[in-house]
Length: 295
Image (cartoon, rainbow, N blue to C red; front, side, top):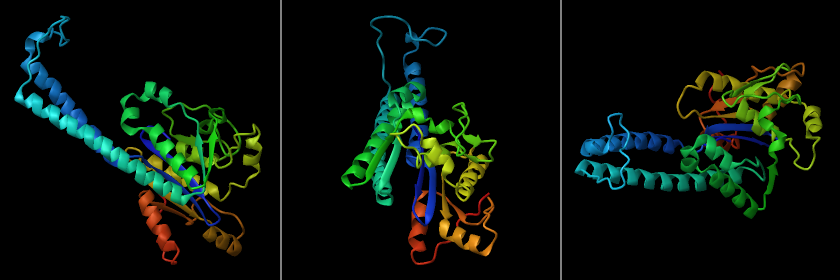
């Protein structure tokens, strides 16, 4: 999970699900509006107080500068306060809604022990706006009240640097796609969440469990996350949800030679988490739609 986006992997006997989406879609638009208003406020302040600025645009160093506030400046201040109020309310509502959905979907939750103070030094205002620590605490507290298992994974596991083959490869923060010599290709955050399914916080030998597991079928979902992300990463507010139907895989294997290719139609791609949930509800009645074809 980053300050703006989350990656989640869920599994049961029938499905393997992966979700990648912004934590708060609406906050992205509010951020844009806030930047526009803040630039307007600075222009209005400078226009009303030209004597308080040096020729290079910096504020003069005097102890008692008098600042005039125009009607337009006061109006813009009011709009900024309203945007901040909307951000607070939207964030609170979204956290409650999303954490409730996630707790309803699972009975065991695993999350890395991230240092959100360290994130603040790297991401600055985004941490204050998106409150990742508050979001994670909300999910885990609701999960505990619901009687679900909560496991915190140590950072030394370095899930973002690992591969399903057990190898470790250091990546730059800007590298969001994973490619390994073993043939594994995946979106980096989705792969980290997937590896969290196997990580054992009480043992330093969890890699052995990882390598013993047959990832052949799951590679389809990981490869789909790589394709979808690489072709749509430039889109603002990118989100997608993937569904691997294990029941379909079982039928394919019974009818074929037992091998599963990355092009198998068992992986469905949906726009976001809410769309996926709606489709899974239809699946109970046998009406699961084919979704968006993998790119």
